[in-house]
Length: 302
Image (cartoon, rainbow, N blue to C red; front, side, top):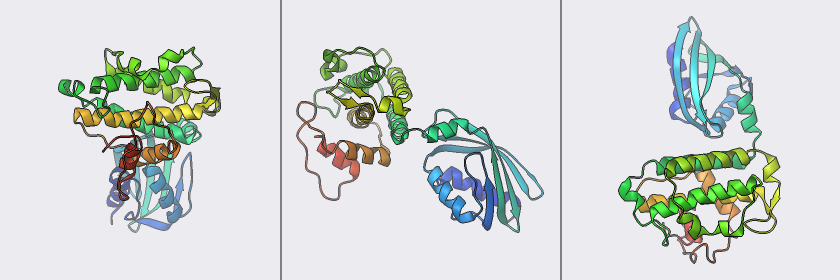
């Protein structure tokens, strides 16, 4: 395998195989150095790449040139826990058809800060992104259709979703909130001029507030006595996930939530009370996928 082909296989693993380096010709004693982590074996690097690759949303090689045994590339990538694009220079050394050395060069401060954030931060970022993309695909007919929530149209469900995230951000931000503000029907009836844009703003503020332990460890008296900030973040996740489905199924647009988001929601809300908020639970088969099971628990039939 020549030098450029070896590099192409390496970058293809990042672009199309979520960091799976199984087919990449790494030397057994492959040495990798980078600002976040370094490795002195192919096995260690492959394990890291597979874990990191699961969080990569987009990856591209912007520029590349070959000089003897060296392949120098400028790469851009996006990760679920970070807004925007990361850019780096990377040098690969190839000998006898195998990559023997790699060096990644970039300012990793933003990534280090993201890695130090609570686990729920990346889950919130993922569900907000999934829901925002779905909202952007709704046409005029979709907005007036009946949503998966029996009481509301798609538009009303969207109003409620934006209102709920806005309210949770107000609570977490220490703003005064009246009990009447928690009325779901009231939020459903409050129209937003540009609902997609309003959702983006509300989601961004929630991400900012729930990005560190200070808010997550605080206690609040709304929507119930002695609620933790982490619980508020979890409620925000559930609102985006489940009402995202309500909206998508009513509007007839695709919606495939992330598996990790669904698993977190199932664990966090296994004991949730239904009452006025949710219809009676629907029994699903033993072989139901996790999201179908969660929807059934919350009174929705997938």
